[in-house]
Every structure is written in C-alpha cells, then in structure tokens.
Length: 468
Ligand code: OOG
Ligand code: NI
Image (tube, rainbow, N blue to C red; front, side, top):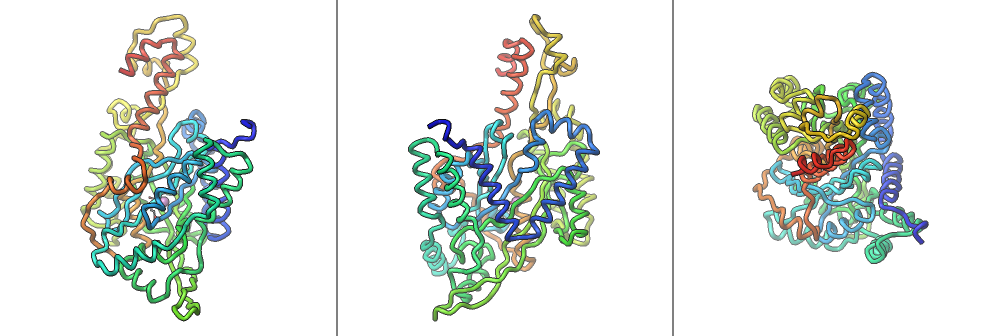
C-alpha cells in the first residue's frame, strides 16, 4: 500500500505542471513570458556568482524552473471552505489574510501554499485566493440577485469532492487516485467561454464592479494569471516589448537593490476575450470579457515585523505623493530615493533584525569546533566564519502590490471606495480554519536552521540558549 501512495508534494507538482500546460495552451503570451523569464534567469545565474551560490546552498535552483503562483476569485463562503480542502490534498495551506477593500477592490484573500521548508524546496506553488465580499454591495435588491446567481453554481466536479473525502478519511491517495484528482481538480480552474448570465445581467454586474462580473458570470473560478519567478525583473520588464508584450508602467513593490527584499512584480494587461452570453430566449449573444493577464515576479528576503514596518512606512511615503504610474512624476527614482534609508547590506539587515535568515554550519566551523565546548556568541560564530547565513525567501504576497495588480486590470474609470472594513473573522469562518501567520512561519524556519547548525557545531547548549 505505502509504495503506491502519492505524497502531497508530488500531487502539487503534477497539478502545477498541468495548470501551467493548460494556461500555456489557452494564453500563448504566457508561454512567451515563461521563455523570456527562463532566458533571463540563465543569464542572471551566469552573471551573478553570489546569487547562484546562495540559491545553490538553499536548494532553490531546482525549484526555480517550476516556481509559479496563480490567482482565483471565489463567490461563496462554501466555495472557499471546499477550496481549502482541495488544496490540502496538495499540501497547500492558507497563509496570511489580505484585505483588498481598502484599495477599492471588494475582496479579501489568503494564499494557499506549502508551509514546511522541505515542501517549499520541492515546489512552492501558491494560489492567491480571493473571496468576493457581497456584504460590501450597498444596494440590497442587487445583492440578493447576485447571491442568487452565484448560489446556483457548483465549481467542483463531484469526483473531485469524492477524492477529497477519500484523502481526508484515509490520509492519502494512491498514485492512480492522485492522477485522477489532478485531472478533475483542473476543471475548476479552466476558462469558460460561455457565461451563465445574459449580456444584460453581465453589464449590470460589470457596472457594479468588473470583479463582481468576473466572479458571478461564470461557472467556475478560472485561473486569471500564472506567474513565473525571475531573478532579474528589470531585465524582463525592458525585454517584454521586444517580444510583443506590453507591461504595466511601473514595477510594484520595493526598488531594485543589491539585497532584494520581499517581492517585486509587474504584469501585462488583461486580454479582451470573446464570450457567449445566455439570453433569456435561449439564444446566445456574443460579447467579451477581460480577466486573464500575465505577471512576473522577483522574490527577495522575508522581512521581520520590524523590517516590514519600515517597508510599509517608506512605501506609503512614496505613494502619498501620488499614484504609481502617473506620468507627471518619476515614481522609480522617488522610490529609490526614499528607500535609501533601508539598509542594503546582508550583514546590516541581519544585525538590525530587519530580515529572516537561514543559518548553516560551515565546513571550517565543523572542523574547528570538533570536540570543543563553544562559549562564543552567535555573532562571534558568524564573525569567525563558523556560521553562515542566507536569506529566507519571502513566500507570500503584498496587499498594496496586489491592489496595484488588480487595479491595472480594472481600467482607469473604475475606482470605487468601499468602507474599509476588514473582516478577517468572517473570512476564517468561511474558510473553516484560521490562516497561518506568515511571520511565525519565517521565525520558525530561522530558529530551526540555527538550532540545527549549532548542533552541527557540537554545541547543543548554545542552541538551547539561542532558542530561549
Ligand atoms: C489577484 C491579484 C494578486 C499578486 O500577485 O499580488 C496577485 C487577482 O487579480 O485575482 O496575484
Ligand atoms: Ni499575482
């Protein structure tokens, strides 16, 4: 039996590959982007020795080629509940709570992703999953209509849910069941070229918010983008037009730095795609819908709460001067200027407690410390070259950037203001679980690495002290 068992990491890899193939076939520009990213990554690895060495030490080179994130938008609480169970089969768990209503987008969200180091190394596939907040629709008659429409759909195939139940009761799937699960689950994320509503209803939904139309008019939550990870986003941004892709005006997130932090992202505009609408007289009316786009990202070190607070403050100070992408200001140079106070040196980032690091014992350290009782401090061990530290990669998302990505795809005319009422409790009730706290996960990864490294240096007592 156990030999036939499919592990969650394997199922996730099968699934993300199937998703990528489906999206490549449906959105050819995605394929072009993936090729551009892989060319750019090869060049970056050739040029930056330190970067390559650090990725190698962290076992990140392997995952780079398969690394993707996607995004979906759900319409009902029970869809989110079931989605959590579906992702659990693939070893993906909800991390973080993102409230996008503050940015005029009527959704809140979490990211489903692996949480253990070993699973992240295998394949860190993540899906940013939003839930439409119907409670933010002010007009009651309209809200009731929207609820009725979205209340009629079934986004999962019956077999998907059966396999989820088997997984939950038996704790595993066989290889054959896993393959079937991947095929069945993929159906939920597929593009639908037929709407479930009439053109008239679609327009009404669209007028309320394009996102409401995107969720409510269709049978399922089509994946709306799939994002490869680049090692040099500026190079990709410049090269995109040469391959016939037009990126949005500015890169979201922090500026370019020697020591990349968090996450930088850019996207190309959503495509206008032909849709058939279901008319009341049973005929089909042709129209279009705009939802799917392309995005790339560059990931840097995860910041501690202290580092994150500094990041948020600096970014807010840049954005207060006006929206990104406004032609009257040089957003990029202002961003770079403001971020000059954010240390751009690994040693400073570590000593000031701004970022999370993964520690390892160096061969020198292991040799020198053999049979001795260490009394040195952590900093001494680092200074002596006995302990090495590498950045822990940020595995999550940024709400301000996410809002920027949402907005760049909503067109300029649509800027809504919702009363910013964050509702994490309602989200977790719908989800049927609490979301993991990403800061705790990074802190744990750092502590575990340190403990292991100190044990390797033959100093479990120091390990215990460091953990205290
Ligand atoms: C999700 C946008 C968020 C990101 O990378 O920040 C996102 C959406 O448009 O549904 O994917
Ligand atoms: Ni994205």
